[in-house]
Image (cartoon, rainbow, N blue to C red; front, side, top):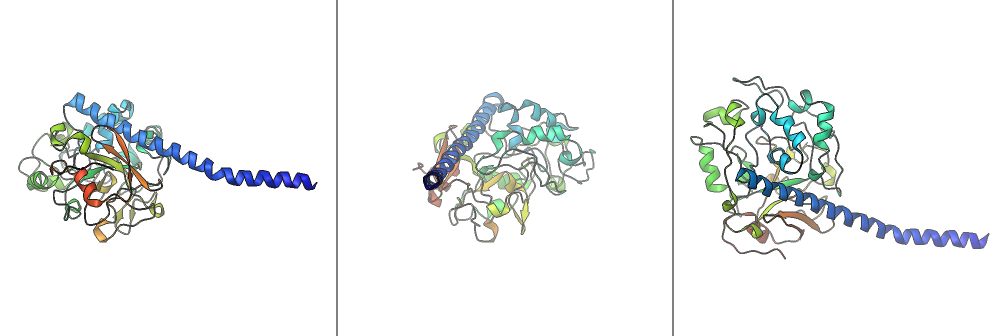
Length: 349
């Protein structure tokens, strides 16, 4: 009997010793899979450029489809993409709930009231949009009337030309990239120096038109704004996308205390632009140090990159490679690698 107890005790000790190693091996596999998902998105960006002769836009217009929908046919998801192109105004359809329009009757929330459960399952099942260290694909539980739709784990880079002030810039109207007579077009040209910018509407959008979900026909046949020449510092020196920081305590919560954390990637407006983007800054950390970190001060709570991996965050580089970057990376260096044309020579360690 004593010998049996000794054997059981030894087995228990061995299991206790092996368990951390098993957990570490599983996390290493999840981290590699997370990096591979970013790699696939990078391939999609290059495929889009090859077929469309330009860089995939960050979005088509206010309340319209985001970059992650535009990438679908280039990451082997044509069926999901066709669900959006078959909407009343195609890619120009207003996806937002409860927004009245003057020219089109597209004011029904697409995610809640148009797409079937099977369609929603197919869209949320796209594994490339999730990091397995954080979560698995599945129908989200954030079905509110404000920003319904699936959540995800990656974000494009948005940044201004002045690192010291770039945290102020994206809090304005970076998502209102409009055309010709709109003052925001000049604002975007002069200040937005991130790698992925918004599309140009098919026709000029002026006055209050850019602020509301109207005039869908002007967004239906969008124009691509940039090609790879926009990345003037070179593709190998350009960060274009990374894991977005979502504190563990705010996971599956879209809006907390007026800050945007874990919202849908279907569309954006001025307050939900952080659902698809994060900003690089120099005066505050652009990479969260740990999964529970809350970045300060006030207007920078929701702009950091970050991951649930220990000590690193994965980033997609312009040449299609993926790098695991230390969370202690210097902010100036990170910012140099995010701005497309500052002329600064920077290399990831």
